[in-house]
Image (cartoon, rainbow, N blue to C red; front, side, top):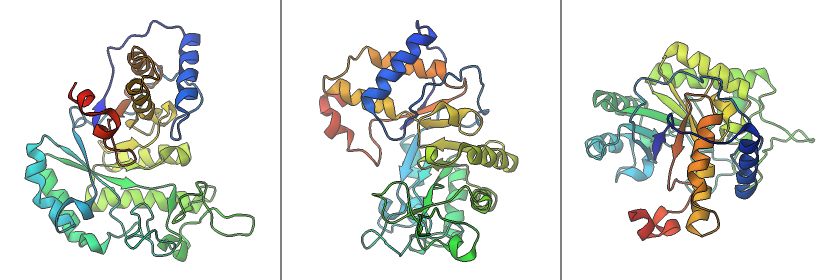
Length: 322
């Protein structure tokens, strides 16, 4: 995965043409995670980028599968290897305790968080995680954590303490928007206490563990005003704190996020590979985004990620070699 910006891109389209092209792409990919309305926020600068962000190579790590030990110490031991590969920004999938109630399988999903103020004991202790962050920083590397602010496990600790509330149905039962996600319930941001609780979560990891940012899962399902308040607070703590949205919308870049996923480009590349979309429109789409997002917006572009099949299977070895 790479961070990409398009400062020198040019688009020979007027505003109406741009909107029509956007609508054509949005209709074609019909993508969960993509803003459906056309916005032109190019007049806005967006949040100032961290000085360290330029030239970063992002590497995703699932701690319990990354080493024979499956621990923070196992990741620490492989930092020299990662650095040799050119990696300088580590994204750790959720490192928190996993819910027991309605757990999927024996191990459960790390995206069903049971307690945001603890580390999963299967991965090690807090001191082990601090050691990983310190060792990475000593090598000039940065670490961001995967944060799931939209939902948590049904047995989330914040519910028991009353610090957070879940969305409930007509019968008062905790529920969720995405029915397939059977091991989680949605957080209720209409309750002020919930937003305040999640702000404390984000502050905690920035202040107590010196992490460098968050990759925010399904960011578009969480109210924008929460993200903007969180961004302001985090940058008071650490001015170069980095926020990456797993979503695709220029609105997220207005004040909160530095970078977001370019899901639509991936989907268009798939269609080009299948002969279903004209290849000459790929650069047009890249240029369109650079001219309608806030000026500093960065885009995470990829050939594969943990939600998609391996690139060699999707695109074929010959295309990847090219």
